[in-house]
Length: 119
Image 1 (cartoon, helix red, strand yellow):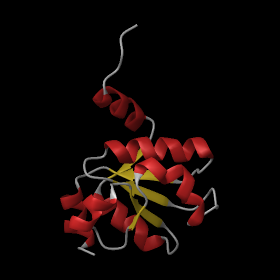
Image 2 (image 1 turned 60 degrees about the horizontal axis):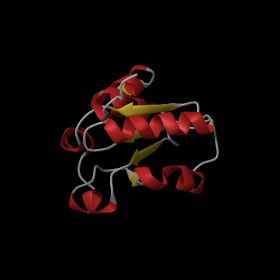
Image 3 (image 1 turned 30 degrees about the vertical axis):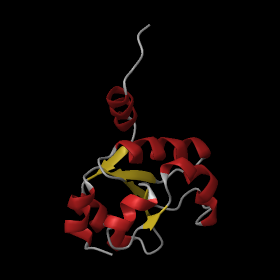
Image 4 (image 1 turned 45 degrees about the vertical axis):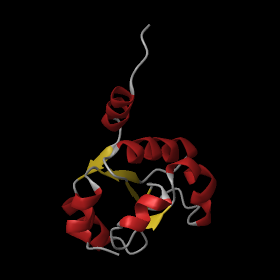
């Protein structure tokens, strides 16, 4: 058995997730008033640029901090990062925790800011 590299792990993970374009995410958010849009990048990255309407919970502490924001397993949660990798791994972790309505916004941070505006 050979080891998988990060790109393979992310690709495998994304194949089992609901992935959205920035516009599809924006459309979905217009229908859901209590959705969470979580930026899983590190605080230093978020300080440089951040999409409007997002909250920052870094990937490394997501499982510990998510219940500060919701304990509703059916609440809409959209995740994004710089390139989609951390968001995919984060979505898989939340699904493993029991959250059922989790998707990733599969784009770069700059692309998300183009659609959502800057915070």
